[in-house]
Length: 456
Image (cartoon, rainbow, N blue to C red):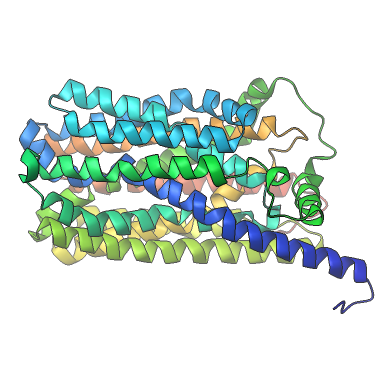
């Protein structure tokens, strides 16, 4: 029932609430499951390494280099993949990505030599390329600006939750050592490579490529989504040189390097955490898995909290007709991330190792919602091509962090005999993240003369 003097506004708001409720129920969980499967197959070698490195005689440097190779091929294939998604539609392209990476993830069980390990990781990165930036672009077509951080976090929460599942399941799968003549780490790759294949088939039949293709939305709901997601782009002149325009955009490069350092931090601890915790505590693989699962649950809570608070400030700013300060919701998490690495790397007890890793997980996850809501604030054009390319460029730059982080940790482990110094040094890129965000915030304030103060 209308409650204001403008019943047409109340009607539009009701249509919007109905549309967003349907999208959150039908799109977000499906995408979240897909990313959960992707992340597990990307990083399950962190648990497989507990036996694989010994069986295949892989040094920490070889392991770190192979783990990071995934991100080089991913980065090289990202822009073509996102352009293909823009051309063929999310339903077909995301399905293709999931099925091919699932097959290659299962093929990891056949690895026998360092060079085969390198090749398998390189091909896996090429197969998965475009899934994450494709989803970011896909969500920009479904959610209006003031809902993007929370929507993104509801999908991206699959990252810490996948660590929960992976941690809980790793011990059981590694415990199958010798069954059917396979090592435990081979069972890990075999079983965890199957879900993306099945999900890829589900995507092909149930995922709409755009709101216009969603049969479960009413005409009014489709119109509301189209209007609310494109209204900021109405005054933007279309550029046919989408790639060139993206490469000239200063903010794309800033966010690219921010995410490069952020992902470098993330994968530095992700690929080494089981080995570090086992060395610090002496616990079994199963107990290490449960610790990682518990800490990842805390990370999921931090991700939801950070995104919800950021979006609430965005809605308040919209109501006041001013500019919300997403940047202020990222900076404290960067500081927490840096402090966590110092505790994690410089401590010498089981408690400091677990506590430090927990702080690192909180810091990384807490910033993700507001950080990935930033690109939509300046990647706007009526066709969506510039947004697709811009997000791909940001993530392409970021992927190099996924190579550098694991390689750095492995190199320092072989050089010094422990992980501590390499992990503590990751506080520097965490502080670099804060410096970039502070710089972008200052520039955004300067570029908003009509709104000199952000709503925080």
